[in-house]
Image (tube, rainbow, N blue to C red; front, side):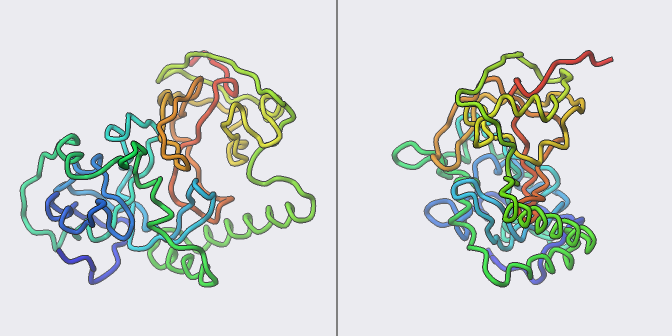
Length: 307
């Protein structure tokens, strides 16, 4: 298959995911293209039609905690990984799609809408290393990206040209990111996470279930649950989460297991949920567009009457 497109794919245009066997032919022996894996969870979308929601120029990654370049990649609507081939990981990460795996709708040839099951795809696509560690797009982002260089700001021009972000959005977020870093330099005020004082952080179990309504506690109440690194039992309270304090939201799902990107191991989570429609907008990380869900310890929330 051809791995280059005549024109870069743009947001708000329709594409079809190429047939499974055609995509397989584009991958190396590790099931990757340019270092990015095609995961078994993606196979069920082969042959189907989707709208491009964003063109991706950069992404954060959790192994080194850095911002990285990524090329020839888009997001399709709100397609997220269901984690079935990765031990049931429940993080619901957005799926990265290489342009080579897609066809503009006007160029797409007629082919059957394949019914590829994830267990069939898993037989051809590795999701673990020989020693049992997990491989997914999130764990492999460093290999699929390049370090930020002096041409970093050119990616924002590409964002504007592709209509991923408007000029005003880019200007507003870059000024905001610059100012919080200046404040950090001058005052030493941590801009990434909320800092607490606990040596041993407390635990609270609410057994929240999908569909229940909760209110996020106040900033002061949450600070009382955190250590100096802003963590409650290892889970950090990001400062981007502060704006949701005091607001009421519905529980989307419980988070009980996930692939830990730095270690590539499946870890169990306790007393943690994901809330509906609350995603990271990447403001403090140079406009990372991954739209990852925030993870909420139940001790940061309180159950409320939906009325």
